[in-house]
Amino acid sequence: MRTVAFLAVFTLLLLASSCDVYKSWKLENDVKGALAKDNRTAMSDFEVSVAGDGVITITGEVDNNEHLDAVTLIAKAVPGVKQVINNCTTPEPASNGMLDDTVTPSVATGGAL
Image 1 (cartoon, rainbow, N blue to C red):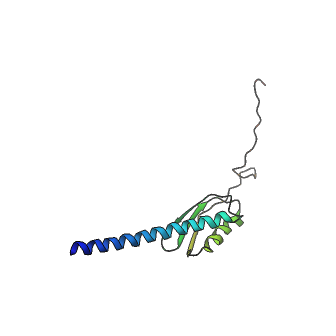
Image 2: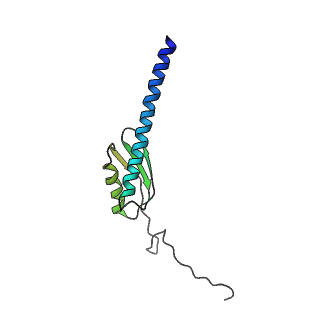
Image 3: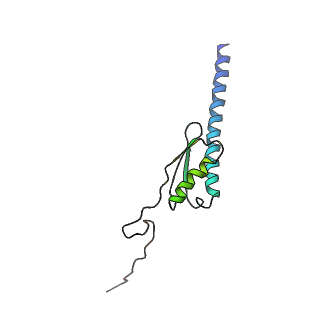
C-alpha cells in the first residue's frame, strides 16, 4: 500500500514539475515571438530565460536606447509576464564617434611601396 501511495505522490510531483517546465518554455517562446514581430527589435538576437512565476530575463544587443526601452515594453505586453529584467545593451561609440561594430575599410598596399 505504501508503494502505491509513494508512486501516486511521485507521479503527481512529476506532472506538476512538467507543467511548470511547459509554462516556462511557452512564456519564453511567446516573448521571443513578440520581440521578433516588432520592427524595433526584429533584427536583434535575444536570449530569454524564465525564473519564477512570470519573471523573465532578456539579454542581447539593440541599436539604440529607444529599442532598449521597447524590449521591456514588448515583453511586458506578453500574457503571463509579471516582471522583466532587461539586460540588453546598445553598442558603445568608439573614440572616433563611430559604433564599435562599424566596419572601417582599410587601405591595401599590395606589393612594394
